[in-house]
Length: 355
Image 1 (cartoon, rainbow, N blue to C red):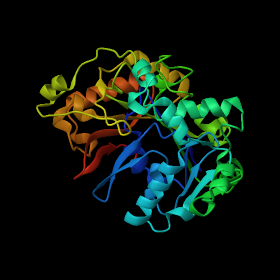
Image 2: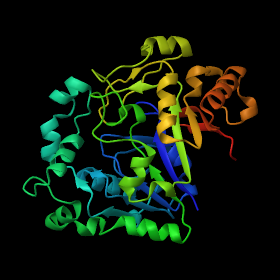
Image 3: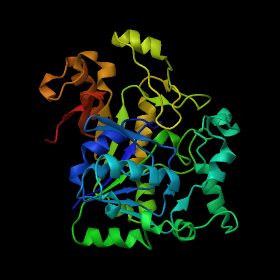
Image 4: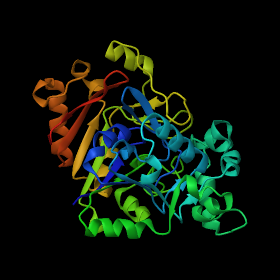
């Protein structure tokens, strides 16, 4: 029985989506509690999947998918994702999805208030402006005039038949642990964006650590058996005035380094990301707070282009092996997964030292 938290070490977009999808078949329950301001991308059957609500473990047709009480759920985005998966991959997907009654709804008024990438909050701190912060503000105000639990919203809008609303997903997860089912808590964003531990005010509207993931899902933190922390060799931040970044560079310089054109855009805003150098201090702080049992080191092909597409550890270059050795020694944590590339043709390529 495993209860695993999957967290980011930096500023989001570390590759949690591809790691989650890679591990999809290893877990019986997949839980997501973040908000739709974070998009997780991966390739499945030759198509790019970009998930803002549902856990990436949906590709495991035997897994239950839960949006826990700590989730902020945009009903429109959720239904769009369900419709798309139902049409393209799994006509019975709705039978496996459960939303906690007490999840926080994100309404059109919230996204309008923040204004997406044209709003004041995006200009001020680089927020996606999707309305997640506004939804949480209304929830904390405990004013039924402006918000209500997701279960009441579903009943009022009469779309209970389109998605299963459960009175207490925490109880369901407690039962699943008693019968030795494995659970993955799919975290969103990254440690550097934590409201508690990140670069305030350039941060998100909640904590993003493993302990918070457990609490938001309704699982006692001591029940966690594993924490997989995802860190990329060259971290990114979202576009705009989104906060400090060590030794920031640009995509032209990265392209010159890699001898090919590279540029990254965020899943949600579609704006070009900022990119910087490896920040040892940030990753150390993330280790201190999250207590990872394993590290997934992604974008190794950015550091060692010669290792793009490599899938066996003994085929990695000396440059990659040296960096992996440094990471394991410095942070006293084993590197279990090494990401070596991502493309629509091949999906995510990686070295898995556990298999």
